[in-house]
Amino acid sequence: MKVLHLPSSVGGNAWGLAQGERFLGLDSSVLVSRQNWLQYPADINLNLQNYSSQPRKLAKLAQTFLEIRNKYDIFHFNFGSSLIHLPAKHLNQFELPFYPDKAKLFVTYNGCDARQKYLTIQRTKIAACHNTNCYGGQCNSGKLDKYRRQGINKMERYVSHIWALNPDLLYFLPKGKSSFLPYSISFDGIDLFPPKLGKKLKIVHAPTNREAKGSDHILAALQKIQKTQANYIDVSLVENLPHAQALKIYQEADLIIDQVLIGWYGGFAVEAMKMGKPIIARIAQQDLHFLPEQMAKDVVETVIQAEPDTIYQVLLNCIENRQILRKKSEASLEYVNKWHNLKYVANLTKQRYESI
Image (tube, rainbow, N blue to C red):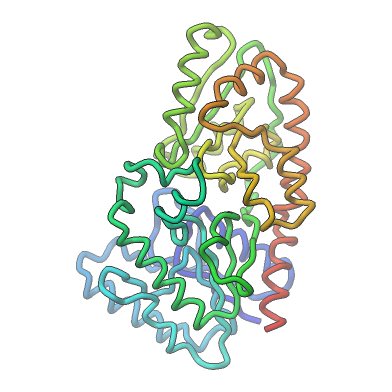
């Protein structure tokens, strides 16, 4: 069975999933339309960032589609996007109707490709969507929410199954055709680095988007602690660094802070857990029913949970009670090896590929 994951490298999830599927005997590859600054690997890279005009980009995408449409049995899209996907130009997943009948189509939604601002605000009091500056305020007009709904509706018509990497996305995806899928991160080059827990606690936060992760709340709490506990913490922020460089900083951490708004952890936290790092993140209890029952129990026991109004006290507890961090370090490694094992995640997709 030949599988192609496309067209983006968001979070390195497609690459990790392809490696897991290869372990299970599938001929699985990754195509990306452009290289992003994190520089995740791919088998095929169209490098559209090097094309200066929109017509040339469209021509390259059309040519690529004609080349791949009969070469694979499975087309697994990610970030809610197909190869030719320009919503603002009214080309929502344009090529979906033109894949051969024998091909099976699937899609994974990663985050804000499905999450919708105003429905999220109505549903929960804590979310990045409440911040009008999140991602530069691009969702404030409601236009992107409309594009997302249109895209989801079209995907539903053509794909056999839909996965979501964040539990809350399943509020926006069609019931009966959608399910949760854990992150599938390739752990190549990621080794065990348990926290050293010396006098100074080394705390790392990676605010890839400050508004989305609630970094203002996190940084305010850290600054407050530094006024009284400066001799006991050492804070590092990881921003705008290639993935390989960021990993080197994570290795030295005693404690990783992911986010306090989104309600789930990201791929960054998965990599940190594989190093044996304790993680702080907000886990939205009301979303856990979308997970396997045992995973829901395990995540609550593994992740050190914090919200905007509790992050300061949570950090103080970590500084004052290092035994918590030792226990959470062990729990992180056990959790990631169980629920983010590439063979485990790939088996979930393989079963769907073969059963439909």
